[in-house]
Image 1 (cartoon, rainbow, N blue to C red):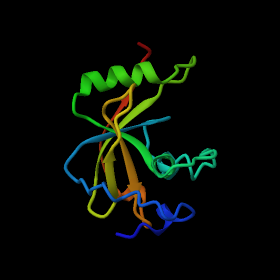
Image 2 (image 1 turned 45 degrees about the horizontal axis):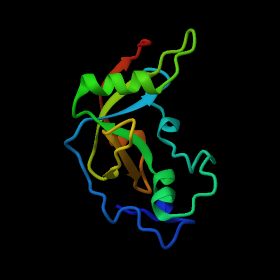
Image 3 (image 1 turned 180 degrees about the vertical axis):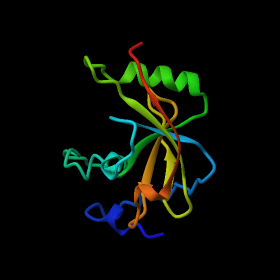
Length: 142
């Protein structure tokens, strides 16, 4: 796997130094409809919303994709319900998936609001075909 795109513009940061490939864990990402699209796996950096990040941890986080591991499904659903706003007629969807060989690498990055948070670093040739989707779960307000 190559990660030239990941490290472009942020040298000398090494985002994958403490990351690992994981093809066995079930992960989840919040998406807007029950069908995964390439744009659902764009990073804050790719969206142009990274701001002025100074240290390597912040830069790597902006280059990574926010996902969560499904260690405790019910607790994670509560975390997601409390984290995302519910506008009338809009209900976020949880997409459950596994990463296929060669998709990229992950690093556990728990936060105060989500102890299951993981940064996913896409390899240079990543596409949603590198995911094995197991379920879509439409969230209702808490």
